[in-house]
Image (cartoon, rainbow over all chains, first blue to last red; front, top):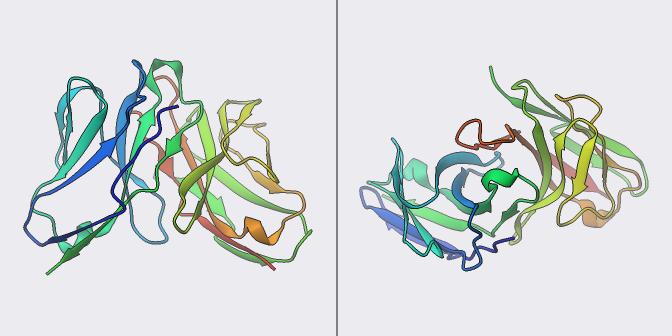
Length: 112
Length: 115
């Protein structure tokens, strides 16, 4: 199972772009990279998933280099409501879910 | 509305008194799993199930049991709760074989305190 490493916390201001990097040196060929957002006392919520290169949706972008040993979640123009914990999750692939290992997450604080 | 429902949301109990936390999903998902969340430790998987009658241990299964007799339900059983099982518990579900983005749907959580 690929273990992930993320910064424990990050600070930003409203309107700025935030990039959170996740390291996953032992990622397997079939593993996907998924990011989740969690607000206090709520369950995590899916943000974005990718396998390689770049993926973009209405809320975020995910950049994955060719070696796939890291990935970067990019949040454009953050607002106060983006204050949350962000988890990088590696796994699943085409072998099904099996064990899923979440890291400790990155606590993002957005200030006015 | 598509959802994962956990009950109870809050529970205070005493050491040794058996309890069950229920989890139900209405999305016809094959995969279901339980996590506990403790300060500074993130989310740790307790058990998971890839379909009815198919369950397996996650990273922290000690002191817990599960069953999957129906596709929609995946109860978490604490036969003899201890104070170190005081935690916030989450149930999650998803389709199994990349039928969509692979999104895990989480319940709202069950906060358990064992005295």
